[in-house]
Length: 178
Image (tube, rainbow, N blue to C red; front, side, top):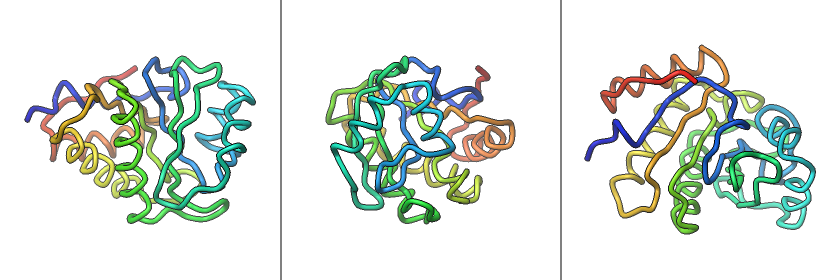
């Protein structure tokens, strides 16, 4: 299976990407505070937080879907990789990434964009994050899925470099810049 045309790594602003869904690095209470979640709330509007409030708490390692509000992306998948104020674990990141991909496929999405989940406020190491998220994405794309393209949209050069290193080892693909 070729991943070169299906997994795209780029530096940019996740809130500006035009995909079926963007993934929020969420806490399990679905409170859109700082980091990626805060950026999604600011750009997408209060309607996203209202939908999260209606959903309520979800288990760590799972995910929930809301509309995209004012974002270019039509939906937000909230990948709960930590408790509010807590830290991300490898197990929670692996699970929430896989669940996010399955939710996207269940909804017949063709495109999804991830940040480096858990590496900001939650303090998860970038290299480990890249390894886990790319592994889960490859595993998902090897099966039957509606997802055609998975974007990793990284905020800064450090995250971009970490994902590029892992991609070169695992995918033998180049990386694009936004």
